[in-house]
Length: 92
Image 1 (cartoon, rainbow, N blue to C red):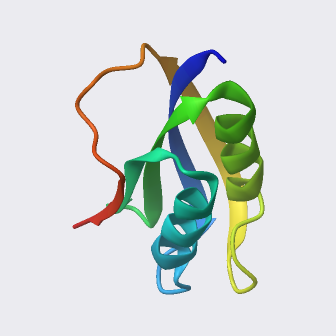
Image 2: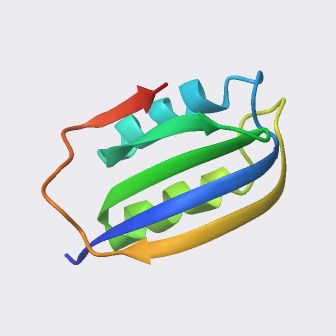
Image 3: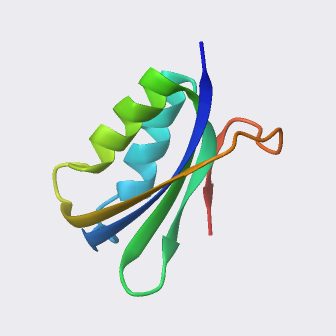
């Protein structure tokens, strides 16, 4: 199965609503590699790497987020997969 990598920038009410925690839980459940972190201006960045259908599922989840979140915009950038990731982590 084709492995892909996607960088996702999420804007809206995505900080202070456990977005990073739930993103990690979802990514771990799918067996994806990558990270999630808060950015300035109330944005969240997530990097997902793994089989295309699972990465696409993670991107779809990010369009909604957890119950208390409100996603206003999502910017998606596909990248070449790399061997620089171990598991999925929350970064500061």
